[in-house]
Length: 182
Ligand code: AMP
Image 1: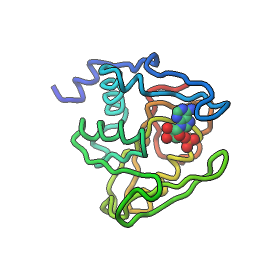
Image 2 (image 1 turned 30 degrees about the vertical axis):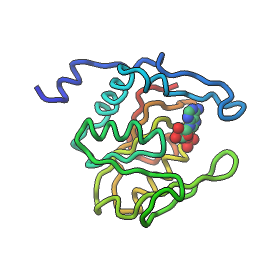
Image 3 (image 1 turned 135 degrees about the horizontal axis):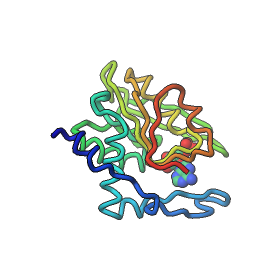
Image 4 (image 1 turned 180 degrees about the vertical axis):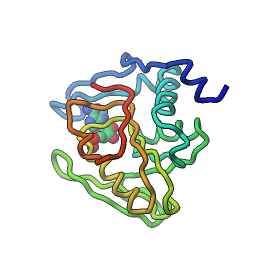
């Protein structure tokens, strides 16, 4: 029995009881989805990584790409689980080598993400991973960076999607997967 058949057989649901709602964090009016209870639970962590592994056929991508910092947690665990490599997209000034950089708008002000220019061979297929899709600004900037270094994002996978925000619309025609939608 292959790994995939084994996973399908288990039919693992990711229960939302692992996600803690924290009102007014980091500022008033934001309902923060805290994933630390999920990480703290051996079962929750395993289910979330298996859920991400099941969401997108691993034969369709070469490398997992995660966004700082919670995308690193899920992305590296997923890469290890599937025998893939991992590429980090980081906040500005953190990567030591030559970078491409992309700024994007936040509700107030802007933010920037960076990737190493040599993080991909031309045509490498990337699975993009982050913990949560909200407005889509973060992932949209990440997709731009991945294109710019010559890789192809084949899909985006999130643990959580805030379905009441138009994040999906920002991500063009890249398929989007989320284990939990609110
Ligand atoms: P966005 O660019 O609006 O899609 O925001 C996505 C990024 O911000 C992700 O890296 C999330 O970790 C973080 N984020 C945005 N909104 C929330 C929220 N309500 N709870 C937890 N994290 C959030």
